[in-house]
Image 1 (cartoon, rainbow, N blue to C red):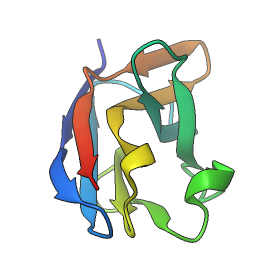
Image 2: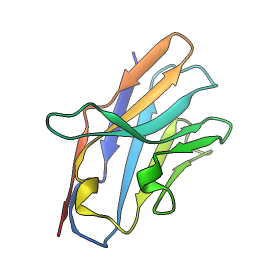
Image 3: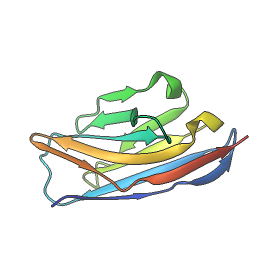
Length: 116
């Protein structure tokens, strides 16, 4: 059983920064994709950024140039999201996700609130 432990959410003023962390424990196929998704009430969960275990990244257009996703090679299956120049529209619940062959796991989510 795979578990995802997220941390780093909170309340920040517009223009500020936050760093989200997610550590996956359990057995995961070595080639996998970890990433972050955001959900706001009444809307579908949407991709923010993902990174494969070999370093390929994918960002939502709205966060390109502001947010940076990274993985810790020393701590396998740990992913970070450095969020800079935060805007009120970045507010939402951020979920960590890890996908591999025949597996797909989600974290519990962490709230990010950006005040104007």
